[in-house]
Picture 1: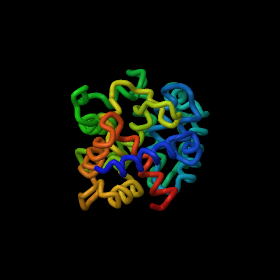
Picture 2 (picture 1 turned 90 degrees about the vertical axis):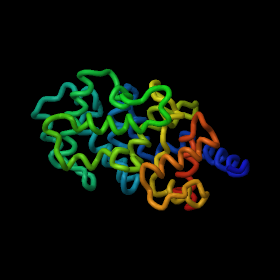
Picture 3 (picture 1 turned 180 degrees about the vertical axis):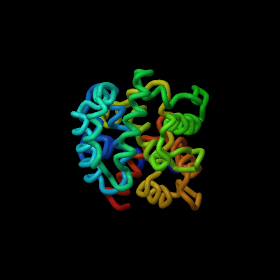
Length: 256
């Protein structure tokens, strides 16, 4: 890894990891909330719905949380069955009302037991874990452990065990775990270390990373995301995923 590339990518991280990035990105959704659980719920949902045009994703999330009276944690714990009728027509691409209602039930079940969504991600991860792989695999298993989990909803939560690149969940974890003073990522969680995160490998990041020869694998899957992250650890072993800002910004804003 050349010093020149490191300097270039560090410069791009500084350029994009700043509050101006928030407004046009799905991370703007959890930034509307201040309560920890609201940030977690809205962040997970925004990341799950993050495919397609960013403006559409933001509009759909706005619609969804309006249906929860813009208080998702309170709504999830205290709604009546009759309140669920309002979700009958909610849809974003292949995510529909069935999926929405299951997500609500999952979160209700979780927050009746735990104070934070972080509890669902940390089983299988300890301070010696190289990355979050085991935690993500376990998370998907227990996400769909409720007896009435719809088969169709399972496609909306990825797992390394299925060799998915898990780009949306990795993005969500970046939001929750990374800590700095730039105001974009939240850094709410403390049991997963930033050094254990895996870089979200979306279309733009993948393309730019290949151009910069940070990826050699032909396909884009979990091992590809790990390969990219290991390369980024050569630049910053403690916070490799900060380079997501650089790679994504270069891909989306600069068409690099």
